[in-house]
Amino acid sequence: MQPNSTSSRPTNWRRRLAIGTAILAPFAIAACGSSSGSTASPTSAAKPTAKAPAKDTVDIKLIAYRPATMTVTAGTTVTWNQMDPGVHTITSGTVAQGTSGVTEQPDGMFASGEIATGKKYTHTFSKPGTYKYFCEIHPATMTGEITVK
Image (cartoon, rainbow, N blue to C red; front, top):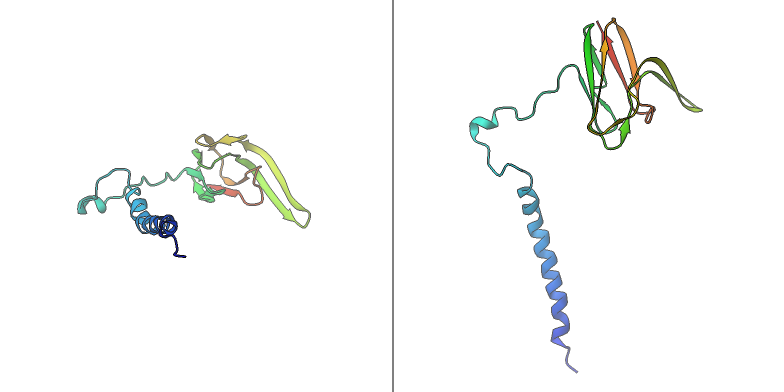
């Protein structure tokens, strides 16, 4: 009995499709890397494309305050930009971590409440000092500090 040559065709076809996809996928992904559709000229490559973050701005990104510490002058209004999915808070105070777990110790100086993605919170620091803060949802990992001079 001779093997049926048509039974191997679907397997060969699938194998070729898989190999072709594996070869072409990196090129397709690379082509999607730029939304402008144009290439950079030598003069535009030297210019920065991203706006530098303001010195009085904290981004909430990847479950962290970025930067985690900041020094400002008295009278400065600091803005927190919530860029993570879900919600976070900015609550003044400290967090104690011990063998029994994490204990939040808010001091009542400022509290944002829950901030959703794309929202902002601002606070004006009028007196010199060191102001620690944390996220009530992620107190063990999200802490920050503002030093006011």
